[in-house]
Length: 527
Image 1 (tube, rainbow, N blue to C red):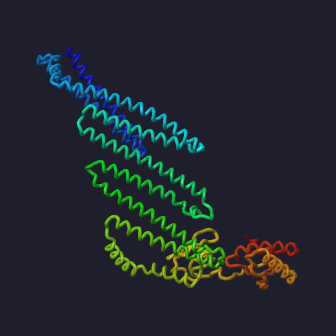
Image 2: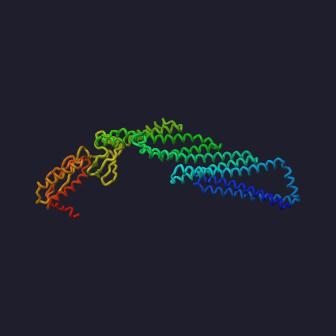
Image 3: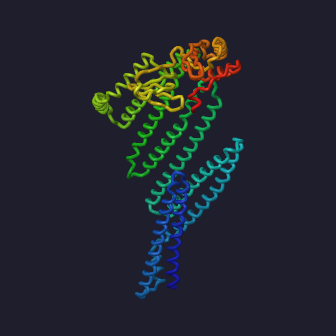
């Protein structure tokens, strides 16, 4: 009989261990299903194994203590059965009734939770099917299923945690256990609801984005949406940060030990809002500047070039102003008075300005370039001193310190305004496309002149970039086997290279049709 009593007590301890291990396993499964903790899956599994090991060790120690204590009682000559009955009789009868009712209520609670989850799974499956039928788009089926699966896991986790709390109350466990379980439930619900809101917000933003694209047209305000659409990923990131900060703030508030840190949550949200609003204000203001400058569709080429030159400057000034205002607002949000900082920055700025003469020189030269109209965006220029590397190409931007020039071969050349040097602008009013044509010595020059002028006049009629017909400047040089004629064609600024290529081809074709053989130059033959 003593052995049976010892086995019963050991079996009870093992049962309690198995029950606790099952509850811990359920809790860790809920954590691993939370997307925010999936990246820490290995750490969670390690923690789970450690807790299981501690429970197993406690179970073994308890079993050894039970066997040792009962063995000691037997050694003393105690009747183990009578001793056990006497101990049980000391426990009030109401305790066993309460325990039995608590166990029955706990079993019923778990059964009701399981039944509720079955119904929940069925109705969520019906809702998922209805949503897919409503969308009528098989491409979204996977995302819809993922959303409803996530919703099911979040609700099921909350139901099981609530069932555990009820069981703790039914079994009359210490109030501290219920209190900590309530804290765990609130934290779980905060994280679960936050992640669902995150998914819902992303879906709403994508839906509104699709609607805006669909209904945008040149007659309403949505015509600007396509130029502001690149802000959508930035909006999503800001909303994600706001939701994560709200979740973290609410979670911290549940833990009394660190609840004071939660006061920083609203400030962080304000800072995120300031950053987002400043970015949007900058983009909208820049868009309005472009809209005002280019609203008139009847602008001349020179007016367009001048306004294209001003746009980057407006953008730079606007960017500095908006970001400066954002920094000041962030400092006020953090309860930091920016006045001493600005005063210190002013003193430092003066000291730096005295030493940064090159920077000041670049900025001043940039203003002179703009005000004296040396060149504009879109002009084809050559810049630089003869003894140094000459930069040439199309001006892409004139900024406070530098000028960006795109070479005809595609390289982007950036030169400081203070080092721009002498400037040759090929885009002022007009330019000559100069083409040299070689003809044999025995050619009838009058006939050659006539052919070239007729071809040049025809090109003027067909090409709007040609301002005047081709003129023969005369014989440029006398070669060993040919005469070199120099031709001038007046074209629009910046079009000389293109027209030169066209003229070489049509001159060659026209002279060959007239039976005039174009000699091969000596340098060409050597190449």
